[in-house]
Image (cartoon, rainbow over all chains, first blue to last red; front, side, top):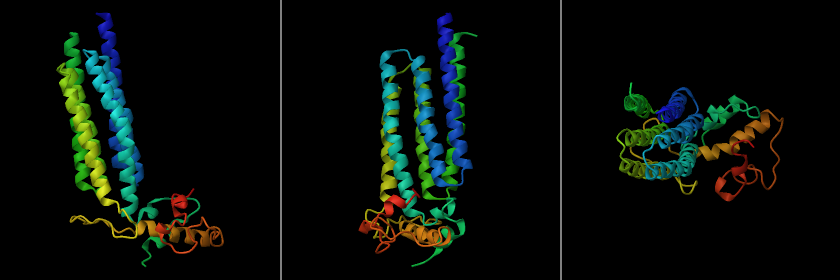
Length: 121
Length: 158
């Protein structure tokens, strides 16, 4: 009985960690002003959030079959999430002509970046 | 409180929280403002639906629900990939794909053209002169990025 409660405690801890990660991701998507920062925030939920959740489910899973399938989901997401993120950021780069006006860099003054972005051919 | 009740409360609370987060991301996908935000929100909704399915599979002790989660993950990945790839121009010299709903979005490929302009401006203002005009410089020759002018390397300010 005690072992079962310890297992429940670990399940609860990892589940709460995963909920925290997903909440952080959603807050980041709402709070950040620059699209690449928002993509980074979403990546937290995709990798860490899902990993903690599947870990907590694997601890309380009834069979080995179940655990293997959960591991498959986790592995697939760790491979596919960076690819999705890469393509979304590439798409943003190609479609947003004012992307430089959102970046604050030391070597490029903000005014010159804005002016260059608004310049027409 | 029995162990079964404790698991039910834990999983039920997690599902309610996921439903709340999915609703928030749905609002985010509606308000946008750019198409990338919408795709990002849909991607996150897919992730959280997969997480909810995994929680349900443990709540009901049914391992076949994880198969559904795997298939959902595949479909979600392919959806994001197709949406993103269809908006990326294959040849930067050509006009990018323009969907019908382009309100507030600029699908031209001028972003890549602005790179050399920004660097040129920065070279004039912050470094006191233009950037070195070498074979790997984005300023050598034309500003067209497709001619292998090394603009790729300097694009993010390395």
